[in-house]
Image (cartoon, rainbow, N blue to C red; front, side, top):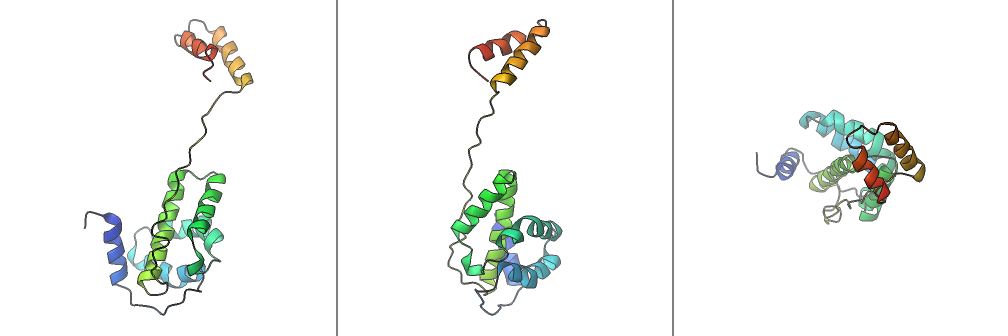
Length: 166
């Protein structure tokens, strides 16, 4: 295949499907169920994974949107919701890739005008807050370390706690 896996996959995706009638008002859910999933079942090895991700994480949030209404703002809010619910950023990125792939299919198949608005969207990196010990946890750790003064890292951990590192 070509050096860029996603572009090679995209070209493969688009050459085997005839142009469809433009319908930008079609919901993301309708497009996915009527066109994308039947296509994916025939051509993508990962179609079961895509289907599971769609059912659990994508369609409940984006399914009711018209294809033309899926904007940077909608995608950003969706990604933030996923992260608040505890999904790892890598999982969110994978889900975003599926959504962008489906929207790309809609463009190439003629259902959605290809204005490139979603193609430039990239997930913002969320800075995770540093993990720190509460005062109670630090005191409990000191007590535990004092019970085992022969434990080799004791001195270093105790010193770090005394310097304010937690």
